[in-house]
Length: 429
Image 1 (cartoon, helix red, strand yellow):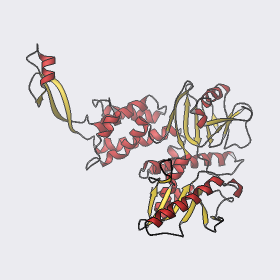
Image 2 (cartoon, one colour):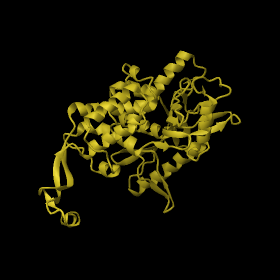
Image 3 (tube, rainbow, N blue to C red):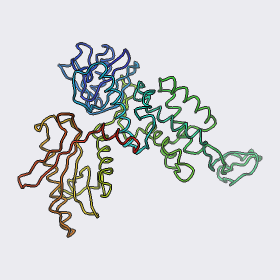
């Protein structure tokens, strides 16, 4: 789907300027000048991870990254999660699916950043932001949190200051006094604490607002940014982002800052997503779907097996000592004993032939490694369960499948319905 300066596709979707492929939801037709910008991006080392050439170079195909790319000309490409396999969608079905995909994407980000539920992401309230570009939705959610801070009050704190004053205040810095005031005897170079709003948390939030003021193209977002910058008028910008984040306080009285600072870290430090730029791309914020799906599976396991211990990406176990380490996505424990080893795979499986042989090898190796680990702890578990979680595909891959290895041990393949699970638990996110 596209307009003149924007196109929306899904993962694995095609984008081109010559012949529009038949699958409307997956693909978009764009102007040649925009295609050339994306083509140049796809030829870079980082761009190759996001877009690949197909159809003898006529099209670019999205890989497993979701998010947004903005070129230097202002063209925006949005890549959304592909959560359905249905093809040849009508225009109305296409619009509905794009909205659903945006909601799913936003909810997956909630899980990634461990954010509480946003009322705006619920179906009934999503209407007013559904047409925003993905990046503008990120900005919108950050501004919602800044609005809460403004409403509840910008916090002050004792801030360490250094200044050359006409009166003695705090601690006199002898070395600086000699260096700066050997002639100006009437001055005192001092260090003191001042109670004001120029604390690290506020500097980071203002720096984020300033950054976004140069990026956002949405009128309402820009209006809020200007409004909030006025509220923080005399607060300084952060001169050392890493240092200011290390000084953030999250204790009593600062609870309403938590979510805004999470988003500040997203924008200022570009954490948890891949940031790209180049000659033809102004900026891009792209998340690997594999990572988002792992976060979803972790959330689902914790919800489903709340009575058990769920460990995600633990420290790993030596497979070949001092050379190779195995690290499954999840260990499920009962009373500190491993009872299940599981992986999450973001792949749309439409037939048994599409399962990866290497994934089955990997889980089989996990079974023997972790069974041995339990054995040397004198608590061997011969029934150690194996699971691989995939996204569910309606009417194709809906039920769990059980496969057996040569030694008669079994592995269970479990399809998870992302949309159903996220939306039925919208009040729990």
